[in-house]
Amino acid sequence: MQIEATWSNPVYLRKCKPGGLIYELDLNELPTEPGVYVFCRTHGQKISPIYIGETLNLRSRIKSHLNSLPLMRAIENAATGKRLLIYCTVKAGSDAKAKKHVKVIEKALILHAQGEGHILFNKKGTKLPTDEISFTGNRTSEAIAPRSMFIKKALT
Image 1 (cartoon, rainbow, N blue to C red):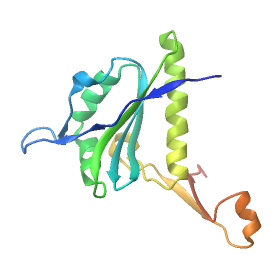
Image 2 (image 1 turned 90 degrees about the horizontal axis):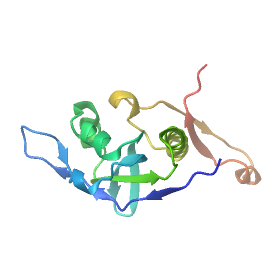
Image 3 (image 1 turned 135 degrees about the horizontal axis):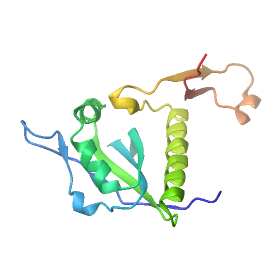
């Protein structure tokens, strides 16, 4: 299957005044198209994903997330740095095809983030569990696998 997606420019989250939402952004900047979105933090040149999701309507889904206290608290409590949203849109032709494409992209991004050692707050604001594998021995084996890698927690 060939999937094409187009990344947006980052949209920075703004901290709200006490007593209301935790973060806000201009929802009118977001499309109503299908896509995959990533809430991130940035510190210097490093960008770390906090939450990765998929939807058939980006604007509607992000609006509901801004009202989700557990998710917004997880984003707020992440390590220092600016908070931002990055999303990609897919052109799939039909809703059924778009749904399949965004699910594939979401899964790939989650697995990649976990492989890079990022701790994600998916599943209603809880940490997505990972296993860490550390290798020792000869350097030649690093062509096959790094010294340390993170994978989705095995169901054993």
